[in-house]
Image (tube, rainbow, N blue to C red; front, side, top):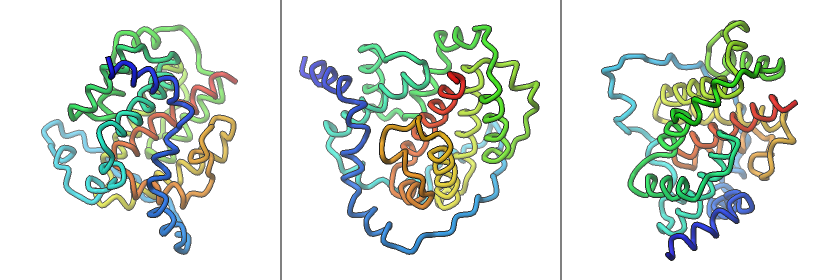
Length: 258
């Protein structure tokens, strides 16, 4: 009963909090880093995605990128639950276009508290029969969405799709493919986290500058690539992934709505 009451509070306040409390927890660390001389960022070489089905490299979890996120990791389970609930509500709405049902939020929180990942929750969502149904809608992507997708794939994934390939999919199919490629690239960067943080910083800065009306939180609105770079150096890898998932879905949703 207490869990359901807390859940009701979470679902009502998720978008209002927008992770601001967590950002405040990082204030000291970020303050020190932001006081440093700005780093000149250049997009790193896009890593080659290995398709070896027998490779276990992605599961090794060795490297600095798997060790960061001290501020979040120190939170109590109750405090983490608030942010997990907020993440799930935002994830469902940006990915599926509908609010998460209570049982979906409960299931997602249980999964995360039992060691599951944000990426895993996302994959279960886009691989569901409901999402597959959305991909079957006969709705052509508009020109703005197609242009964005081609440019995103070229610059940030090192992939050159043909326009004919993209227009065969609707919004839902394009979102799934683009985010899947982004997650593959993230997993292919060296695990020291440096190139990944630079890639994240430049991509996040570009999204905040070009699509200003999409973002509500001050963190996402920030156009300084160094700010996003330093943020990515401080948080757990799963939070970097979840931000990319949500940012790309929100951006593409907004483009198709034009």
